[in-house]
Length: 193
Image 1 (cartoon, one colour):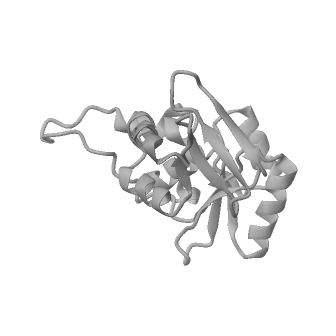
Image 2 (spheres, rainbow, N blue to C red):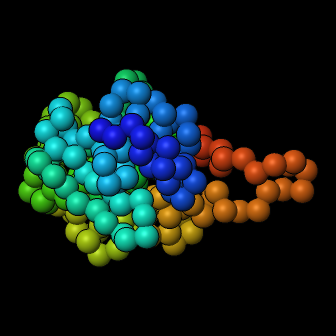
Image 3 (cartoon, rainbow, N blue to C red):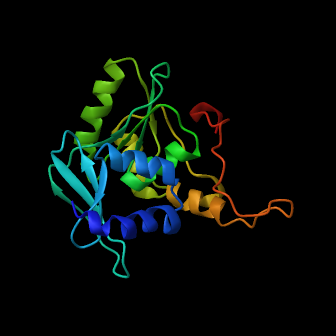
């Protein structure tokens, strides 16, 4: 970790990617996201088995170092649903949009590895949702994990972060004195989309 680069990475995540500051700060505090010496956003995969990197500068960079383990966000224990996304940023975006179950970012895992993980959740009584990108590869991954259904971002967005950024870029209403972070969609239910 490179604490001196955290302000730049945090700014990228909260401003460019429209992720909620309190959520990013919590993930940073518990060690699930940090900055490296190149000012990349670093997301910890699995039990610190690997990392997913996302460039924050002008050069668009992303990759995985170490094991291609999942990035997980725990959900409400009463909800036996798990959504699978492609990237860590999409997982965080989906949480912010309002999915309260467990969220797993596959971060470059093969369809076979993702299917094995989905099967483990299924054995635990979880309903499996594909929340992959809104494209052919995303549809293929949803089939690979044998998802109960594929939930897709609204408004034709490519992925969950694109939907979140679109929500955040809407002009504020005339009665609102300042722009605010988009409110989570609390009515979000996978079966209802």
